[in-house]
Image (cartoon, rainbow, N blue to C red):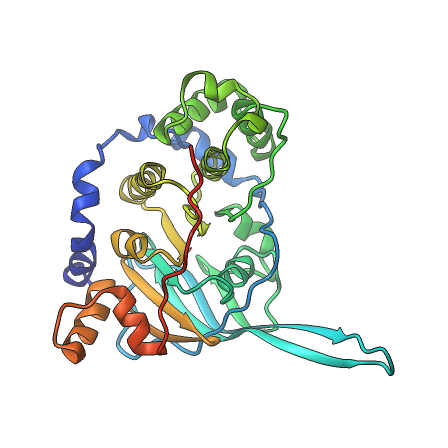
Length: 342
């Protein structure tokens, strides 16, 4: 994807970018040059999401393949499939085995520095795909490479370059955000004093300040706990950040905090982001390109603006991403979402 194409994809985010402030790298709250090498020499700690979803796709749309940025691809997914099998219980007999195709020959590439969205309803397996990329699951077919490293053969090396935020994060609830993040920083191999300064900057950037930094996690809302999970992922300044529904349930102000931080991370550190979401506004404001999933396959992959243009021509009016999903799948994407109070 050239500069002109990326410009068209980013134009939809002008309103968001106009509001966020530019900070020097040292003020962003994630690891700069002095701590980055140390952090990447450690294996990242991944937080498990709860439950398995189903996902699938075919191949990348013709003409939608991105150009290489700085001569490298951050992520290559080639013909990847994942199956889950189980035995149904019957009162008599041995039952029967039923295989579920969770990921069906998924293929796409993500150039370095791109924010790539995976858009689809809950339960379509977006989390399964993220687990495969993050080495938490092994693909049954196909191959995944992160900056040229195979996630199966080079698992330890891959983990040094990635971090992941899941829908449900685990913490020591009796401890404060500071204590939980210091614990994570030690696992990452960061020096204590440096880690404390970075933790404060990260949390303040996400709207967690003052007493909240040292209050027990059990006294915080789920939305605030989710922000701490995002802060934990930023501690290592990953070159590939995997965000699995990172703003699900957050109030609009908290969502904006997280979205602004993701944009700053990409703009100032060239971080590549893979984002799963069913929030169309979030996909449109953040993502350079979006892959739309339905019934186990990628039904479209392009910049949000171009996807809407194609459907607008069919409808004879300006289209939304909801219109795109409806036109491609025959059903709406929107789902009711419970907002987590702050």
